[in-house]
Image 1 (tube, rainbow, N blue to C red):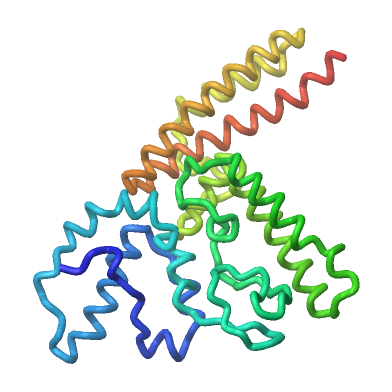
Image 2 (image 1 turned 180 degrees about the horizontal axis):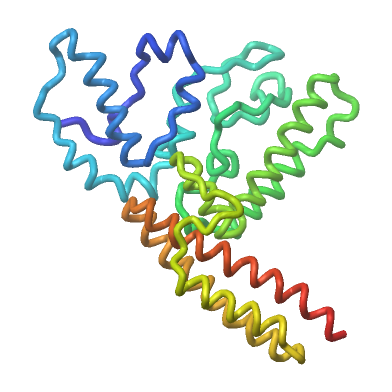
Length: 280
């Protein structure tokens, strides 16, 4: 039986003729492993070298470990990890992914389309990522890639540094907060929460939100507003735990439903911040 770590993306004719296919195939982490194995099956079956007794159940059991310890399990990371790139300036092979600079000529490199924010920020593909490490990585990357550092370089390097800096900002801001991080993880798996819709929120939950909003509107002192804000923070912390548990199990629909609730509570939290200055 092939272990998860021994699986590799097989260069089918479709991938060779259409490289963009590799960057647009979004699947669940566990499905990424299964689909990779399936691609191998399709490719090797014609030669009669594929064994029909492949133990997919064992692969699914390894999914959780794969999810937390192997960054290449990310759908985005799987799509780019096997593509060989060369420096645009000296043509030296870029071994690192992502490569911000060429180790040979030190030229800044352009962003690679399809690279996940987790990979860019050197974070584990997990909902409960280390935000302190994220912030440290962000500061290090911005110090080295800030456009001001390349004002005397070629126009191409100036453009690449601007693109890299903007991408790093976006990746950092997306991964920093639990809500945007969770929504991004669902997006990687091909799931989106539509704006301006209830997205399946039940009527009891919506009624509860209405009552909280009314209480906030009628708050007559900063203490009342602060109390509501404190309750909302507790709700968000509790939802964070439940989202993490759902993602650990690969239960994307459950994670999506909880993220919908988190969006509503996050909106109320913002309203509390807007309300407090009214009492000054």
